[in-house]
Image 1 (tube, rainbow, N blue to C red):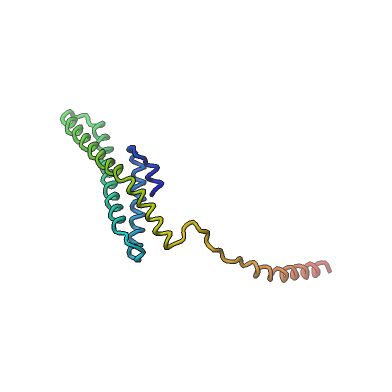
Image 2 (cartoon, rainbow, N blue to C red):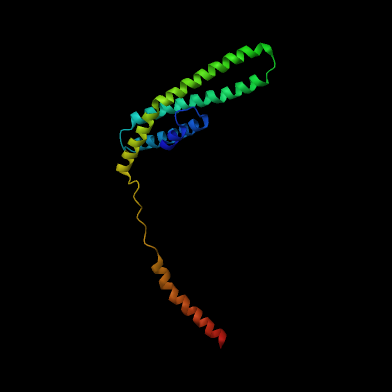
Length: 161
């Protein structure tokens, strides 16, 4: 999520903001599972994520509708529809700016939430430490190899005699 927020930046970029929304949703669901497992008090973080998921969803919906209205507006030749479509386009643009502004206002809150969530998780699950590897089962293979080598030598002797 943190990387998506940085990638989205503060300027309006619909595809990047949609990526933030998807990441917000994934983190929200992960925190809800953590809360169910009693890994911590996560309600405020979940509440912010839900609010941002809803906000970014509304933004995405407006953007998709705006794109469709612009397409219809460009294709429409009927003069009676020009002004209503123009007003509707302005309304959608205004709402889109509103939802984007809400994202920008809460952008740093989301980054802080990511840092806090990472810290909480690292207290429970070691993050960044290499996992202990199981010892390789080479000892079994090594024990079998002399036997294989002996079998090969026996076969070679049989074929040469």
